[in-house]
Image 1: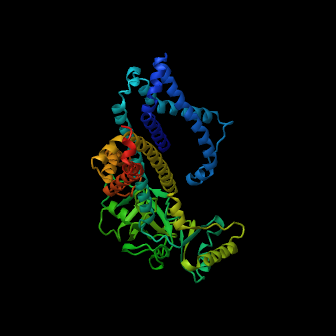
Image 2 (image 1 turned 90 degrees about the vertical axis):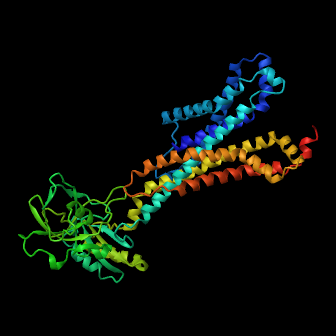
Image 3 (image 1 turned 180 degrees about the horizontal axis):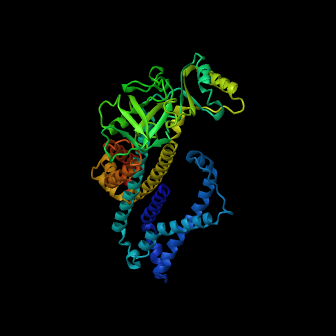
Length: 514
């Protein structure tokens, strides 16, 4: 979609500059018609020119793509390649795109210029100046509407990505190293943990059934006193040891967490469970500590409530959660530990990781040691957003550059067309500053109007994008003002050079032949 937007801006530039040059080609068209050319011949000529330019551009584009494809693959995380001989749809698609682009870009110039009347042309007027000027301004308006939409999209995606990376997840993700536990070391995981904790750079360690960014076990059928019969939430299940809170810096809202003091003494006693605040809100009781909960004939006593923490990516809302200690009704809880997490000191991460690897290989020499850092793993969850933001950023920059190239060409044409007018204004006392403002405002009002159209389109488009995230930023007015002022400033810088040059030209040079 972005590539099509950029291509559309390029087509608009071609139409803009072609109609701007219509005055210089009017006599050519008039003479061709006088010596017998029909309108269809003129139309074919302009279509041929635009299609030829499009295919020349295709050749240079393919060269550039071949050179830039490795960088684009790195940026987008893809493995794209150009295989012309083995991919006929690609070849026909590129030819069709070039042909279609040439037809679109050449349509208005062909139809516009072929309508010139030879009598008027040879008398010195094509009668098209006012129509062409309005059309050019409309095209500038469209160009900057697209560019402003892309600027707003870039800002919104980057702000959302920054929000997700900085949002408080309810636990401390810094300096947490983890590795998966395979079947061989499940029974001795506590022994391994004790040896790992002997290193002074490792302050805490915890065994868990899942990582705190993806809980996959869940159950329906939970019951409690006063439950609404129409309510049957899906409750996520998580198993961990006593050190979970200290390792992840998670806070309790009510009651106590699992500890050696409150584990069951007999297998016939109800199991102990800790729930999160979301589960508490579903139960509908302000303080559920001491309540009896059951699931599939298994009974539990709620001993505490942990504060909500995000155990899913921020696309999804926090779900209700039940946390078990390993031995609590193991037949219904996820009793198998799958991961070990360790809190390490920032200054001694490398030494701590080497110590962890040495202990791991001591008890599990047959398997390679594989570890990760929780903050890096969390960051990888949002790689798609980061790539999308980077791609939109670069394409938005390309769109703005192309728009400015066209605007610069139009400003040059306008300054040339109004040379005599500028000379007369200066003779009658107009200042250089007033002339610069006069020439610049011709375009600034259209760029300002483009904001009025781009803002609502960008708002609804980005609002739909943000609907994919359970936790998202608000699209404030500041984003639109920044994008609009940026577009106006860029346009002003683009046209100001030619405007200043025209304003400071000697009026004698423009009027000495009059």
